Length: 601
Image (cartoon, rainbow, N blue to C red; front, side, top):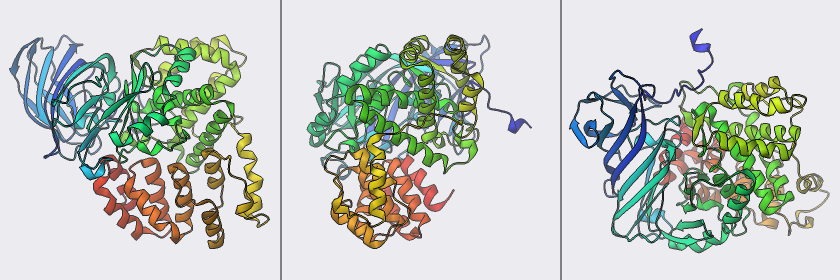
């Protein structure tokens, strides 16, 4: 019976840390990046707040970290203390247990990371745009910070931090902190993050990086070879920042810069505060994929300012952020773009709902005993966003915007649970609009699988007019060359291709490809949609592009479906061959996720 009980609200089942006894308030980090041995080595000093008059041991989260010494005490008076490592858990890593002197409020841990640390990727020069210098980046979400810093790796705990990062002299270090683009390349970089953040938002990047401003508070760091293209592609970032402030409250992080990473980055972007990490796969040359920038920026309100207290509550980060993303796109690019983004998101959600067990369709998902990386799907993102869109539709946009601004102010710099949000909703919108909102329906959205009956179904006229065109072509009534695509956006191409039937004939595939040069598309989203069709139909002219795509990009949004498609369509050997070829250049997370698809658990 105990195993079937619902997860306890506010309990982080993915951390060993004894946060009821101690909470870390500040981190002081001093790390040297050793590119030859692929390790970070140095010291983490934790300022802790004691929450009990007793003196229990301090328990921290680690994963494959080699701890060489621990000192503890009051203020700067630290002495060596005993420590031990507990039993290793396949998902959570290993607890670090430290004996503290009475009254101790500071702990200093000397350590080094493992070369295969799950949250760190070391790239050889040939894996970068410039081909001359190595590159390092970290990715701490969900629970990978513990692979490069021993700490309380739970989003419940927010801390400020200072850091010294030591690098080879030709390289620049940047962090999710106050970056100085004028800092001398002398191998030592100092950082400060004055706002308290959870551990998963601590981030480091090191490489041959230049900087270009895009506005008063925005700019981009990138390898010189990518800098101009990135700055041009994302030049609307300052406009996005200003309209979001205008509608949802002040931006509280001083600056908002972007770091363009090598293509092995496993995500589209990561919302590290002050410095979002961005995949180069969204540099399309026409701003068609900049919704990703809007998304990472929106996290400055939902996620970074108000944070999920555990990974069960991820929808509070991602559902709100996806909703805000669509609104930002409407503010900057207009109604048609907004409707297309909304409709594509709805279609993505439907695809995930068709592919997942009921237990994984619940927004407040039960992740006990599972790797929290499994939470990332369209459920917290698109179902969460659709839920908020329904609230907006029921109470009116102006009223809902007022609610959002008050919500962001009320919970600013706090980590909250799903239950905290529901309680706040009861005190605000449910009281204000009892004739329009229903508590039972809200609970159905959050705690039940699927989408409630009568939920909104976003559509776009720009898409619906493509349905008869696709049907006519499939029926042989028109040729591909008869379709006027010159004004199509990427969104329309994606909708047109994703709506194709499972099977197409060889002649149909050749006609589409020869007419529209789909195999050679430079837009990664269009290329992905086409390659999914090509794999399903074993269209050999696309084989070389498929292999190049899978070996040159590390973004799991593309890789997981393509590898799964290969495995399900009788091309297991091809999948294994390409995966083994690409694996040395993939991020550890990418290797883990796709190994499961190809080789099983």
